Structures are given as structure tokens and as C-alpha cells.
Image 1 (cartoon, helix red, strand yellow):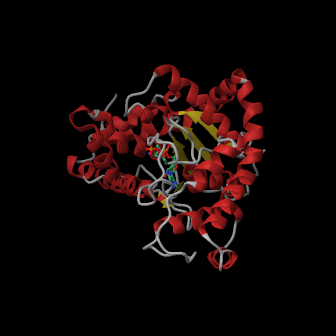
Image 2 (cartoon, protein in one colour):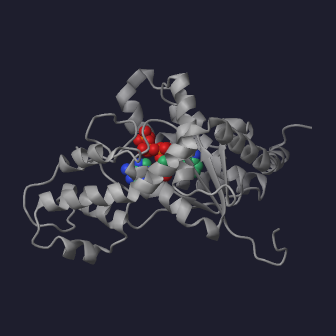
Image 3 (cartoon, helix red, strand yellow):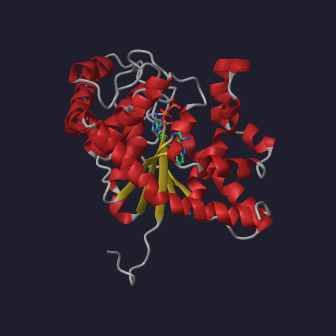
Amino acid sequence: MTNPGAARKPIVFSGIQPTGQIHIGNYFGAVKRWAAEQDKYENIFCLVDMHALTVPQDPAVLRDKTFETAAILLAAGIDPAKSHLFVQSDIAEHGELAWYLSCVASMGQLNRMTQYKEKAEKQREGSRVGLFTYPLLMAADILLYRTNEVPVGADQKQHVELTRDLAERFNSTFGETFVIPQPVIPPVGARIMGLDDPTKKMSKSTQKAGHAVGVLDAPDVIRKAVMSAKTDSGTEIRFDPERPGVTNLLSIYMVATGSSQEEAEARFEDKGYGDLKRTVAEALIEELRPLQERYRELREDAAALSTLLTASANAIRPTARTTINTVKRAMGVGH
Ligand code: ATP
Ligand code: LTN
């Protein structure tokens, strides 16, 4: 029972694409914090399978990954008693609101999105229209639920800022309709870099061996990836923007062990890169062990996962419908 006298908790919304291998960047930059902060918020987490379609996907793999990602989130501590956890395509209102927002946003606004530019560059003329309009679907995800805060990694900040701009433009054109959301970026772990190239963000769509550590990777695989991480010339182990390899490993150490920057630097004073890498690998293995154990149990029961996702979508759909009805009334569509 909710206490009618109690102040309402702020609403948190975030999404993750059910694609590729969920890696430690996704985990430390987003998922771990979602789980840790569940008591402070009304929580809404979404497996954004429609976003995944912006680049080509194998249908059977996409469906399987949706279950895999749901099980990873639950194993990471997302508690269905405290959080909604549902699949984007189960709620038609996401696509519906994205259309209305596409008639509010300008081409110029979308052209300024850096993620689109980076991803489209790889595919040139073949890139999908959906890749360009992707931020509108993301804005719809957020605005449908009257979201106050959006916890994401640093790469998504620009998209949340666009969402704010669109909501403000809509409100000033059509009257107060949307709550203006706030991006929340963690102080450490917001941008874990690739182990093979510490100048590029660790990314699910980069499938090279040695690039990422997957949250489901076996201990040996983790050791191998971390031990072969690219480091810089020099020997000193401290945070230094000129030495992104060592800085990245120290950041991973901090988030995996909960240490401060001073503690991390002190721990490796007078130590070599080999020691740093071994320690980081073991810290990751320890951090991920309980998640992997819970994951294996959850993954076995696909029917239970499906039931949970459906129930959550059914519970939250009326909120989305209410927003759409307000938007339609404000814009003058429908009768
Ligand atoms: P892709 O690179 O294929 O687009 P992704 O790795 O960015 O995928 P998403 O599902 O798009 O994965 O992101 C889920 C969450 O993880 C988002 O909040 C995103 O900001 C965060 N995130 C992604 N990569 C990193 C990273 N390297 N460091 C920290 N957070 C990250
Ligand atoms: N675009 C995000 C995933 C995403 C999201 C959202 C995050 C889709 N909708 C709404 C926060 C809020 C990504 O690619 N990481």
C-alpha cells in the first residue's frame, strides 16, 4: 500500500538496447546505479528493442538478447517489486509519441547529434532513417512517463538535452504538457573506454576481441582482455588525461572496488602495469561473480521472464496512454 500522506518519489527512467554483449561500461555507467538507487525513486527501466532496429539485427538473435538483457538487469539487482521492467515494443505509445515529436523537432536539431554522425559514418548511404530519428524515440520514452531524472552514461547526455529542448518547445507552443527531465551522469564510470583503444568508448557494437569486458565473461576471458589492455609509455600509475590507458584501468578499479581516486593512486604507488592489470582483472571477476550466478538461474526460466515483462508493460501502459491523450488534445488531433 502506498502512504497517501507521503511525498511522491521522483520518477527515474532509463533504457538499454538488447543487443550485443552487455559490457562493464553499460554496467558501471548505468545498470549498477539504477539498481543501487531503487529506493529513492519510482523506477522505470526499458529494454529498447525498437532502438536496436536502427542498425540491422538478426530477428532470432534480437529476441533472444531481449531475454538475456532482462535476466542481466534482474541479476544486477533490479527488483520487480521496486521497478518497472518492460520491453519498449510492448507499448505502442512510444512509437506514437515519437511521431508527434518528429513534427516538433527540426532537421537542424537532429543533425547536431554526434552519435548519429559517428554511427552513420560507418554505414554511409546505407544507414537507416531510424538512426537519424532515434533521439525522438528516446525523447518519447522519457516524456511518456513524466520522468524527472534520466541516469545514463556520458554518451547519452546530448540526447537527454535534446529531450529537454523538445519538451520546452512543445510546452511553449501547445501549453504545459511535459515534465522537463534531467540527465544524471555518474562522477566516475560515465565513460569506460575500450581496452584495445582507450581513446574510444567501450561499445557493444564493436565486436573485436579484447575491446570490452562482458558482464557474463568467464574469469579467464576477463583476465585475458584486461592483461592485454593497451597502456601508454611511461611507468607511473596515476590519473592523467595524456595517458588514457592507465587512466581507464584506474577508473575501472575505482568503480569495481568503490575506492576514491586517492585510494586508487595510493594502492598502485611504486607498482607496475602488470600489477595494475592483475588487480583490475581480479576486482572485476569478484564484482561480476554474484551477478553471473543469479543470471544463470534466471535465464533458465524464459516463461517466467516473459510473464514478468508482460505484467510490467500492462501496469505502466495507462500512464503512457494518459500522456498521449494530453498530447493529442494539445496538438488538435483526434476528436
Ligand atoms: P552501442 O555502442 O552499440 O550503441 P552501448 O554500449 O552504448 O551500445 P546502450 O544500450 O546504447 O549500449 O547503452 C546502455 C547504457 O550504457 C546507456 O546509459 C549508456 O550511456 C551506457 N554506456 C554505454 N557505453 C558506456 C561506456 N563505455 N561507459 C559508460 N557508460 C556507457
Ligand atoms: N539511447 C540509449 C538507450 C535509450 C535510453 C532511452 C536511455 C533509449 N531510450 C531513454 C535513457 C532514456 C542508448 O543508446 N544508450
